[in-house]
Image (cartoon, rainbow, N blue to C red):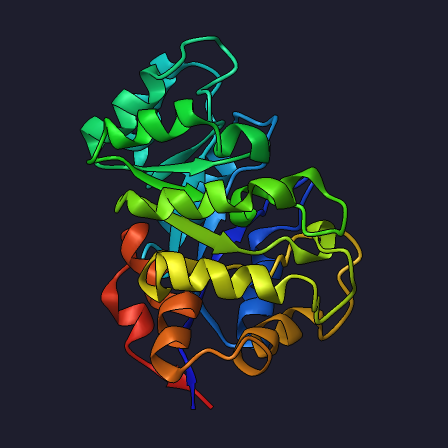
Length: 261
């Protein structure tokens, strides 16, 4: 039996991405029990995503994009579990103001790159000062695994963020950031070190359903990759593939109580 699976980072919504009906079909085919629907960067019109979350709140949580810190409260009040935010805040120049709003609401900052900004001292200070804020580092902080990548030299700085209990990481984006094809062997040593630092209870997974050119069977293969190639114990797999994302984004506990064969 496999653990119940939650995909922690799914883009949906025309014209850039497929509709939620297409993702529901992918969920059924690949055994995905629930998902965190995440607005894509550059689009602060969150109405489609909000409708999708409201259509099935037992299985969908949502993360919005806002242009101004003054819009953050309204997005959270509408029902989003968090906001996508750069390590330095929003593009409007409001700095840490959006982190204050998220912290006051006990909401999630789904933090984008670049990696150099994620591992900067200033970002660690922002997070440490706001213990009610939960920070989810997308795509392992947008880390680039390729040999020769400048990010490799700073990877220990990412691991140091594990000292902050309100930080979790997401394993995803290998198709774009790893230097080798599936099953991305150059990523494995970094994932092992990440798991040791953060623990499975602060590690979550995404299968990158929304990537361009996804071939039939690749989404299901992404689940198999986590189960068969990453050396996770049953308890670790239950966390990484479901429980961590469900807890962080406030999905009902019922989505991870079952399992599929």
